[in-house]
Length: 404
Image (cartoon, rainbow, N blue to C red):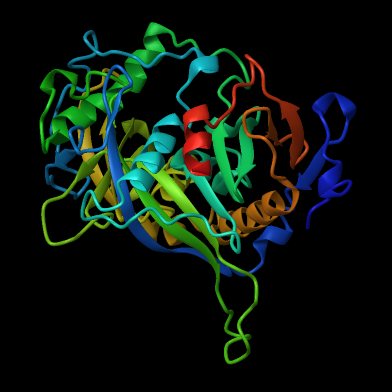
């Protein structure tokens, strides 16, 4: 499976050529689906406001309105409203937040275990490796076997192992400059305009920030496991001794539905798309199935979000219709263009590879970089020193707090 050179202890600085490689064996990934993400438990939440401050409450949480889900009802909402007042996130990638808000939440839960009704953060156990990661990273990992708009040119993750826990975050300095043109911003904003029409604050604290800042958002933290399932042929035999991988996943929640369901079953994902990809009722373009729905499935499946609302708009940003998708239906709906088995089998291979080759280091001095090179169908891992251009993904406060 893995074409890795050298032993784990031989990983060296990038300049020394001591890289480790993981091939992406697309043919082998087609084996029967034997893995799944299970037991999605919400263990905490926090709000990040427009200036980047983090609060351990639901001040940025939003309630989602119910709308006709036949995909045909014309609502004619202008998704451009509010664009001129919208505040965009700072795209200086060397100072990006990365995992900092999640680390603040972990420290808060460690120091205040009984503060709310949610479960205490489970301290990593030396007997089982835990991954702490944002949902965006898991989406990249799951979709790596397929070419998507976001994977063009590859991507890079920053990784470290601290107290036997592996922390991962996106390296946004990788690739071309991401300065957005006004036209690109206008297109991106339509998703925020769609959210403004469909949601309202649950506990408004600072209404002026509502959906007018890209930096503001409500985030829940979910505990989930990537487990190995028994195939039909192996049922009745002794279960595999391989351990499940425990993930602490942070995800931004677009909206919550009123009703009897508890988180994350009441969460709703909101997305937009050009209406040219909605060919006719219940029929969509191949690109929509292969790109939009693949990434939507990967985002929602790992954290247990059951429902996705897609708003289709015309070239002027006027909403033409809304379609509802159930996350568990997407793999069958898109079976001709992507396979759930390939995605999950690769996620299993990739996390095992990280467990094997990521070593415990001083997280404020060294870390690892994992680069996805789609042109070579491989992942490249190297160990690097932390500097101004490669800041640590863990903070001094977090390291000190976890050592206490």
